[in-house]
Amino acid sequence: MRFLLATDGSGDALGAEQLLLGMDLTSDDTVRVCSVVSDTGAAAVALPDGSVALADALAEARAREEQHARGALEASCDRIRQRGVTAEPILRYGGPSHEILQEAASFGPDLLVLGTRGLGRLERFLLGSVATQVARHAKQPVLVARGPAHVIRRVVLATDGSEHARAAVRFAAKLPLSGAARFTCVTAFKPTHAFPGFFPTDRDEFEAQDEQHGQLLRSESDRLAHAAAEQLAEAGLQVSHEVLEGDAASSILDFARADGADLVVCGARGVSLIEGLLVGSVADRLIQTSECSVLVVH
Image (tube, rainbow, N blue to C red; front, side, top):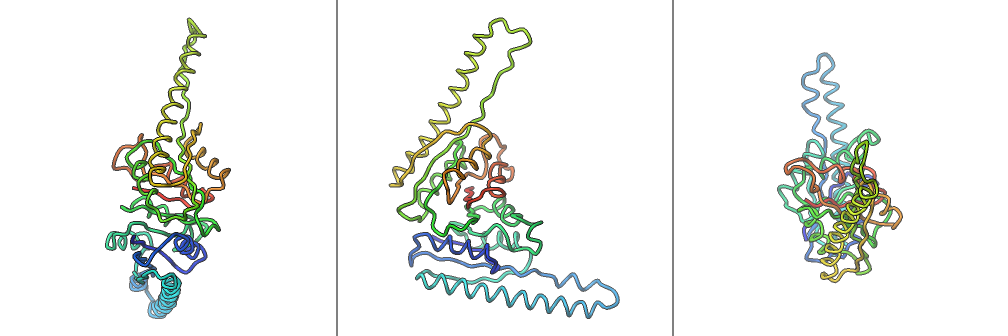
C-alpha cells in the first residue's frame, strides 16, 4: 500500500506516525512523509517603513521553520526505514491543508494519515481544523490519529448502507491491522414518533403502529450492520455487530468510548445528504470530538 503521512514534528504528528507503524507494514509498502512550511514571503513586501528589517525577521523565522520541518522529515523517514519500509520525504510551501491535499492528489496514496493538532500555530483555536479540512476534501481515505494507542485492536465501523459506508467496509477489510484486531459494525437509528392529532380516534391502534414502525427501523438497522459484519467476516476478520438507538454521532461516540475503541471507521457522506456536499456532519463530529482515532472513507 501507499501511505501519505503529514508531519510537523509535533507530538500529535508523532502519534500519527506511531499509529501507522503499529500496522502490519511490509517492504512492499511505501510511506511518503510530507511537511509544510508556511509561505510568508509575500506578507513583507507591501509593508511601509521598516519593511526591510521585518522582511529579514520573517525570512529568518521561515528559515528556522524550514530547518525544523526538514529535521522532522528526516527523523520520521529514519524511523520508518528502520521498519524495512520505503520512506520518501517531501517538503512543500504554503497553507497546510491545501498543500497536503495537493500532495495527496499528486502521490495518490491508498491512505492519508495525520494528527488532530499541529500544522498550525494557534493550536487551541485551530484544533482539528487541518484534519477536518483534509478529511472533507481528500479523494482518499483519511486517518485522523488521536489517543495514546499505537496498535489498533478494537475498531468500531459505522454503517448506514450508503455508498460511502459500503466503501468504508471494503477499505476496512484490507487495512493491514494486527490479527488480534476486533471489529464491531454498528448502525444507529433515531426512532420517530408520528403525531396522532389532537383527538386520536384509537390511541391503542396508533401506539401499536408507532411501535411497529420502530421495530421496522431497528430491523433494517440490524440488517445493515449484519451485512457489513458478514463482509468483514468473509475477509477473515473477527467481527460482531450492534444496533444503536439515538443520534448517530452521539451514539457512535458513546459506544466507541464504552467499547474502548482505538479506531472509528465511517463513510464521508450518509444516505440523507445530497451528493456533492462536503463531508457529512456525522463524520465531522467524529473527527472533532472522538476520543480515539477516526478513519473517514470517501
